[in-house]
Length: 88
Image 1 (cartoon, one colour):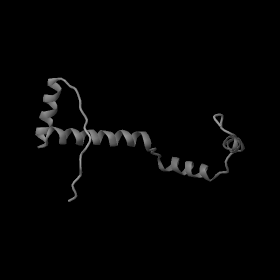
Image 2 (cartoon, helix red, strand yellow; image 1 turned 30 degrees about the horizontal axis):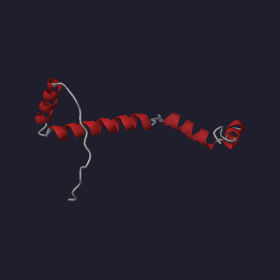
Image 3 (cartoon, helix red, strand yellow; image 1 turned 180 degrees about the vertical axis):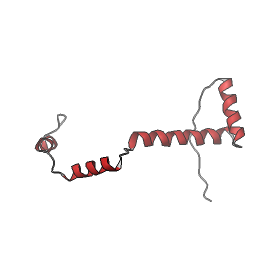
Image 4 (tube, one colour; image 1 turned 135 degrees about the horizontal axis):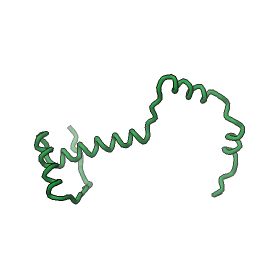
């Protein structure tokens, strides 16, 4: 198995009660505080990224979307794309 170099740190400030609770949860899972926290943070990060970057459509809605993509682009949209950007 390849060794992965971990060269980045992430520090958090918390109350003693918060740390105790997190340590208890980690112990219940048989993990170190770092292992447990990293697993949970990565899980939450993946979820948040998916929620913000994925669009879910029902089958009928997808069919409507796909059909719209097959339609020719409206003239107003073609003109907008062809126009020179205001920052140029």
